[in-house]
Image 1 (cartoon, rainbow, N blue to C red):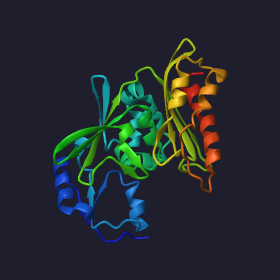
Image 2: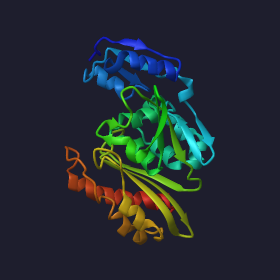
Image 3: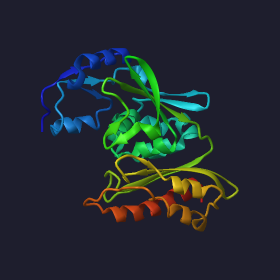
Image 4: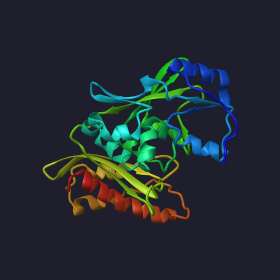
Length: 284
């Protein structure tokens, strides 16, 4: 299907983009890599009068260090997340999750910030960002503010980004030396995950010191498996040592029921995938 007619703007700076948003208000939609927005436009599920393309704003791209954190531009592509030495060294989980996003073509166009701002609970990057304790930097007419990942994802396709604001970068605390794995279950290649688990683990001498576990498609937003994280502290990095902790992964979740599986199926699947992800992240 052909999208409804719209005007196209391509600002060269964040300030220009904010000015365009202020001018056009509810009639405008922001576009990052376009991998979420363009299908919506083609199906005419949304028909904005103006599309503001952020793709020419170079300041929104790239990965850099800032003390104990990595700063990742919102327009950094999934492919760049996979190949970045800084991301692999200090935030391996993000690299692992980005490698599982769709296919090569989409990874070369889709962006980390765009994926998180779209806030699809079945998207791969939200749970990884949540597990990494990321902070989202949002720019508006009054300046910039930072929002923790726990507060960023508000509801289905809804985030803390205001209608007159732009996500500019994601700050991620370094987890240098931590193992990581993203375990994703699909029926066919490149499908949205029925359930996926993002796990990053600090382990030494066969014992898990700390663990962070994010869940994909287990509710209306990405979720943390808090009970599992607590139970993993001090656990042996073995099948038996991880099993009881992984069995708690679905506590407090409200997964959907659809043609791919009902809620109970997803809850069981979450425990299985959590066990696999944690063991692989711990190097077991």
